[in-house]
Image (cartoon, rainbow, N blue to C red; front, side, top):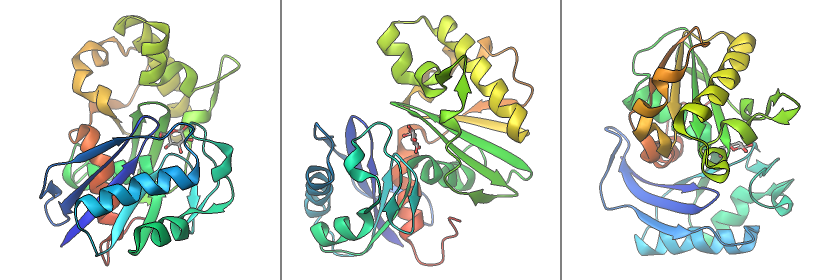
Length: 249
Ligand code: BGC
């Protein structure tokens, strides 16, 4: 079934129609800049721009970089506080004129990776972490998602974990791959102490450059692999969440 998936990120909002049986885009992806400040009204308009670009009138899956419970956005670490406590799903559905399914971005990316990427067929506890503007997490046990785990925000050395482990932090501080890998290593080890996954899948755009940092991870005990869907994972997972009978937790 073809569903439009849209991924709201800290710097860009990206969307493409996805064949949910295969995880493939059926048309070229469209990207618009995330409005600044990223308030609900302007962001909803950008999402609608993508819906109209594809002339879409069916269901749409949308990801959000924060906790989402029953369509209500509960946190928004890298957008604005205006999202906190908002029934964002209904706002988006109204602005776009189509039914919207809304879920956390890392959860969406995780579902896509578990179905079409590096987590295919993996049982036991699998953790997907997405490294971008923030750090997202999606935790699976025997393929089933526990949503909104928010492990990007565990405290490391008195700081929010994502301030050290995100791809954005590496760019902002101009850390070398090796230096950043050391921080990522410490972060993953701490998360591992909490949930003991047998596999950690590292996602986000930076997973395209996995050869620069995965070899420097020395402390993590679990198997660590790069995601296979990279930046497409959020869009694919969003579409899967909006497809009838897809299990997203
Ligand atoms: C948010 C998460 C999100 C992650 C990646 C974090 O700051 O709290 O909900 O999944 O960034 O965007």
